[in-house]
Length: 308
Image 1: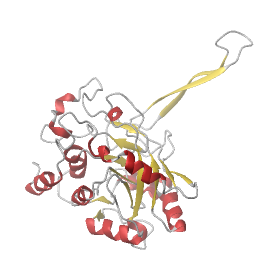
Image 2 (image 1 turned 30 degrees about the vertical axis):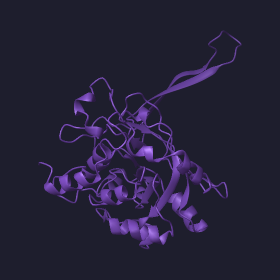
Image 3 (image 1 turned 30 degrees about the horizontal axis):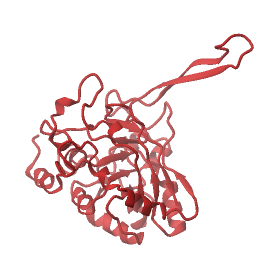
Image 4 (image 1 turned 180 degrees about the horizontal axis):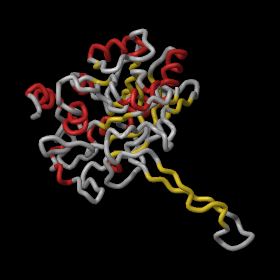
């Protein structure tokens, strides 16, 4: 199915190609200025540290939806080995094989393409079979530290978890903003809680994957209008799944990553943060979410921490 006119209308409205120059590879992360980070640091009042990553393990979140995206395979390569001779200090080393988007992760700007292009109008063919994104690899993101804002859509609606297949609308985001008495500012990283990760935490990998609540194709305009630097949520697919428009797969990915140059995060565990923000009655915090700098990669595991 060709991309419909509605998609192209939104794409034209949110497109950021050339906004930070023809050579830019970071997209909306350019909105995280020194001033934004200094202001974000003032959100740390108690020193409370809330981890947002799921455990990396062999029975993780992947259920076979995407071929080759495997949960971590963790092996020991040496155990208590006296590598410098008998009686010396012994070492244990391990190795892991996994999909870089298998667990809690950032999607890089080269992760998806449409109409033969990636972010900033570069050809999709610049992502090669040798595991290299020539442009906008995740290593180009640099440090990701900014003011974080939790838009707790589920709690704002009085729910533990949004129903599967629910499309989070711009109105839902505004209502969650009002519920948290917080205003999304330019350079913020927005975390959208649906509660869907509860199924993953309970061991229901297939129920976690499908059907899933997620962001509507109408929400990129909302993020673009507020100059949001990045967005993450607590689902496998990020956007509503199955899609709102029949046979239009991953349109929000394409609008965010390709058109806006905005990184996406998936499989973030926002449950403890939801509780902490409710108890503190504040929904803004300092967020540290540094990507692992795999050269030319289209995504990376991340262990984000919210500091309140």
